[in-house]
Amino acid sequence: MAVARKKLYTPEEYLAMDSRSEIRHEFINGEIYDMSGATLKHNQLTLNLVYVLRNALAKKPCSVYATDLRLRIKRANAYTYPDVMIICGKVEFDTGRDDVVTNPTVIFEVLSDSTSTYDHTRKFAIYRKLPALQEYVLVDQHRAFVERFQRTEGGLWVYEGYENLEDVLQLQSVEIEIPLQAIYEDMELEEPE
Image 1 (cartoon, one colour):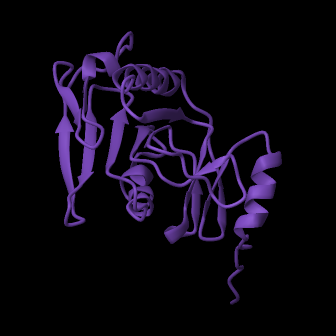
Image 2 (cartoon, helix red, strand yellow):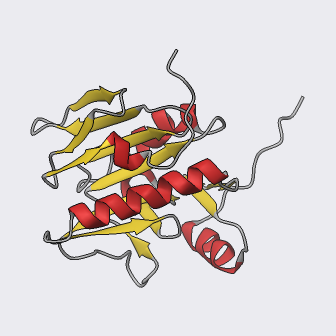
Image 3 (cartoon, one colour):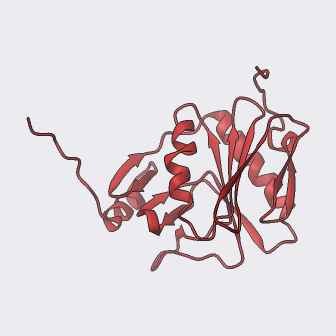
């Protein structure tokens, strides 16, 4: 019995299609994936992150970007749309593009029920191929829970978890501290288990 083969796309085909589309898509090694719409909680968390990060980075040579800015991970033949990125120094664009960046220092993903496993595994494996990336932060939208992975000088990734609203997220690559209380401000959260 023959197995049907999925059509694989080139990066150029993906960029042309995604630029014309009303919904966003991610591209991983020739395959194109539709991105689901964000929930109200997801949207609120993303906006809270942008607000607190922008304020914390006000006097630093770093900028915050959210949701609709496409990221290219050349070593993984992938394009994604991280929820929030911090880029320090000069923004580096993909060749010939002004809508695709390549050099985030920190990436944040707000976890949803449908993407949590993907964000923890395959997407993190893809992001680790970014030479500029120093920290990867996952933010739970249902309860106060933030996970931070930091690249060491030796290239290993070290995990740190924050589980209380009184905790303070340490972003060492950009030398800022963010209270979880600020990340989850005005949000209804589930009780801890």
